[in-house]
Length: 191
Length: 93
Image 1 (tube, rainbow over the protein chains, first blue to last red):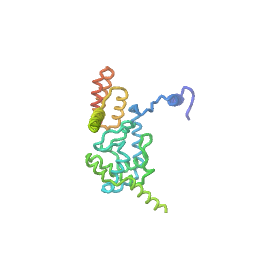
Image 2 (tube, each protein chain N blue to C red):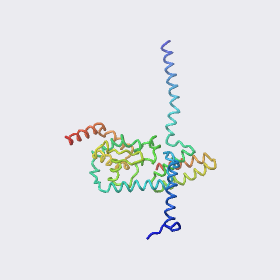
Image 3 (cartoon, rainbow over the protein chains, first blue to last red):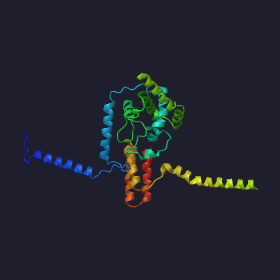
Image 4 (spheres, rainbow over the protein chains, first blue to last red):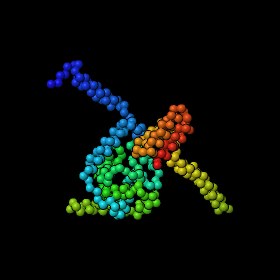
């Protein structure tokens, strides 16, 4: 049986925990932690943020099965969507950093660089977004097919030259038409 | 006569417009590597480095950042700018 007399080790641990929680509460209430986006997190906090994010995405993307990502139509559609929805933050081959990409914190990853993420994880991120990162949940406005198109294109991005990127975007279907098509499909399903 | 005056006025206008556009063009040309040495620039660089994956680029950028901070502490602004520039280049690789 545990004994909670004043000098017992349990009482000391409980006391120390209480002091820690109290100190954290005071620090939060006093606004000691700087949440400004132009002052980066200390490395341990950034590591914690990245680890929580990566583990959360991996756990939730486990059961997602990718569709055909090599399909040329998918890649072409994804190119147009990427240029409109993503390139402002994630940039593209031959593109200089934009004002928003320089101001976002954490920085949006430059997708011209190869990634460790699986297609399923990329799909999950595009669909659900990431809290407190500026990454929106595109799944609220776009159906899964269009989001897989974006993933298919993003997978090819690191291999593209600036010229190839430009050509793909120029020949991509128009975003508004894709959205109309999606809405027609959805209203068909509801009828 | 009037036509001549008009022509010369429009030429002058074109010249002025041309010169007015020059500084803007040069600012845009240097946009990619405009470097300052201050707390904001150091913090922005730290945020850039955090986003770079582990590897040689990150190691180089981190070393250059540390050197820039040392230079800034010693009030050597040119040295600081030079290291910030090198760190930026490493993060862009």
